[in-house]
Image 1: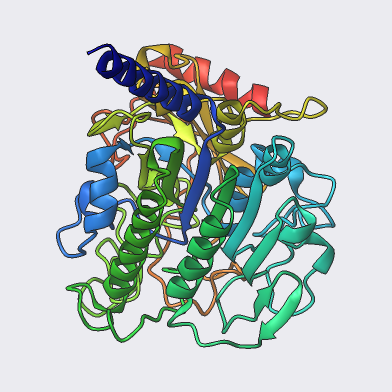
Image 2 (image 1 turned 30 degrees about the vertical axis):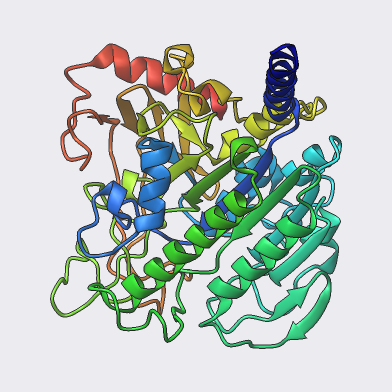
Length: 451
């Protein structure tokens, strides 16, 4: 009997020690970043015609964020998630007024922050911070020069056929687009397996569902939403492969997986929906939100976001507190026990409390600022969003939008402040400025402060 109790006691000690070790060991992080995926393009965010069982499972086993923001367009959103800074703070080399900022080598990325704590770091997919072109980009601004141990992907976007790189070596010029989602995932899983005995940070910015779209034969023609739906369903399948790999390596209780998108969807013209409010074969859906990519209406910047972390993230939870890609760097740094850069302004906040379901600790004064390139167009605090007075160019006069087969982006000018209650008006249709002048005054003061 004594031996039995002694054995049971030893087992208990080992179990407790294992729990303590699991809780004290630095967590692993995976950030899966879809490109141009709309708020309404996943089942757990209301899609009825695109099947996303693995993303839906993430939400069921973790947390769905319903007020999580990117930026209106690709490059700025990537700069934000990498640095925790408003994109205007980090735009360099005469690139301030262009669509895509170039991330200068002097900026400190999340990968560099995590490496101070011994993390293995890798980027798989679309970097898009070394110049937005297939030629003439800056090799000195590759991920491998910005804190990542390993890179497999394209330094730019997939507006055209992409050049595929491994680290800093071109391995496939103008590669076949269809298998990229699978190939990025294959590489990410291999990296995790190789580095499973040390903390790792995997950044997986997919090139899809940004146009040009393509999917493998396994998924092409299988969804109810045309090629766009096929692409989303393939992304979802590969999200599942990531989760399965984490579980197979017995790392799930010490790993956070964040799935989000860089911005809202292109709203593509087609013969059935000339107003662009409903998705076409190559475009996404912002669900109940107004407009899409390249807009500071909610459909352009509020993105589908899910967090999974068994044992750490509360199960089947919805968070409607304001959070954004700006918060990723300070939050992951806090979870890893790393310091954020002290020699510069970091606009994001540590939202660890949200990750763990402590919503009562949320900052009640937290604001989100809606920039389109150099222009501050709106500010949100709590349920209130204020569109600032602005003029807009006539449709068809902006070079970035010419020759793109997209529905007209909401190019709405405001002669005076336009106040919206987002709790009641997600479509941003009703101006309440006259009824709530003190709210307008407060939000205008916030706007002037950030300017």
